[in-house]
Amino acid sequence: MAEAAFKQMIATSLRQTRPQSFRHTKPLRYPQRPLSTTPAGQPKPARDTPQWQAHKVQSSGQPARERRRLDKLRNEHEPRSFSSFLTDNYSREHNYLRISVTERCNLRCLYCMPEEGVPLSPSEQLLTTPEIIYLAELFVNQGVNKIRLTGGEPTVRKDIVDLMHQIGNLRKNGLKELCITTNGISLHRKLDSMVESGLTGVNLSLDTLDPYQFTIMTRRNGHDAVMKSINRILEMNKIGAGIRLKINCVVMRGLNEREILPFVELGREQDIEVRFIEYMPFDGNKWSEKKMISFGEMLALIRQKYPDVQKVQDHKNDTSKTYQIPGFVGRMGFITSMTHNFCGTCNRLRITGDGNLKVCLFGNAEVSLRDILRESNNGRPIDAEAMEALRQLEMDRRQALPDSTGELGVSEKEARLLDVIGMAVKRKKEKHAGIGELENMKNRPMILIGG
Image (tube, rainbow, N blue to C red; front, top):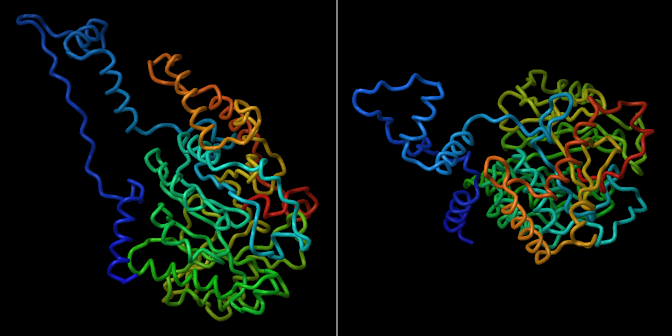
């Protein structure tokens, strides 16, 4: 594709798919009500008295339903309290949802999957695309404004682009960010279509810049394909794609700690954020504290060559501690789950591939949303046709039973799901366990959680 034509495609794509908050918008103007009048010679009632209220209703010239509609419009654009279903007992508001869309992966990374592999769930136990969209919409309507698709490896899902397009449509409901976590093996082949669907960010897992070491750590080939995906993102960003690229590197003693500086230097002239992750324990990854390199040790190593490395102000809900070397375009971050937890500002929830809600990556408590969702379908997976029938049934019931304000309420199924979600969120602990406890706790392998 010629560059001029590609630039036009990207520009058109961004106009169509970027959330409204990314565009310049004019202030909203509401319809004005007629000025209140009183018969000649009669004083206007004092404000906020019963007489004034009655006068206001009589003189507005608008039916009650229209006044409710305008009041609703005003209320929608006033600050509203965050959903109680997504707020835990420590006042943490969970506006970030990570959805695992597959348990399959085309790599076998040492820290993620046991060497012998993992038993995959039968396909009928995994969420269908309509079920994922239903749950995504439910969470967005409650205040989630960022969704990240994970796996396994999400790009191996056959309908991943269509799935992203449907989730991207939720920007009209308040979604602002649509991201993906990937190993990059096949990303370059689907990236253009993903940007058209509304992709705003890519977290790309890469633990070594050495092709030979890549084969050792992933038990597969594919280093060249990953680098092709990184370069494709950088090329697209030069012509306006605006994809936030972060490279996630799990550092393991004896394997890749010597590559910390080469990873840092990727950001010398390129807008890349490399995030170094402390090695974490999950079922089957043979974690030991001796293999873990702490944030402090990694930062000290970097300072030996770059003593002027500076701390950058983090955002409230950032999982990483961010630093930058003066003169570098890119930045580096450290995800310090083992040595300095960031639980106090955690805003993330996870849905596993088999439909369980997980409120903490390191917690082993889960509740099934899939089972509630499928109750009205006799426990069977819900395809597009069945979902359309169920949505129509819910709409009919909601129209028949309006709430006290005359507006349509949530359906019985939505109410049940929200109750279960709310109770799970309220049970979320103040912080997860630390070294000495985590390695002895039962938890899924990382690949079955969804990064």
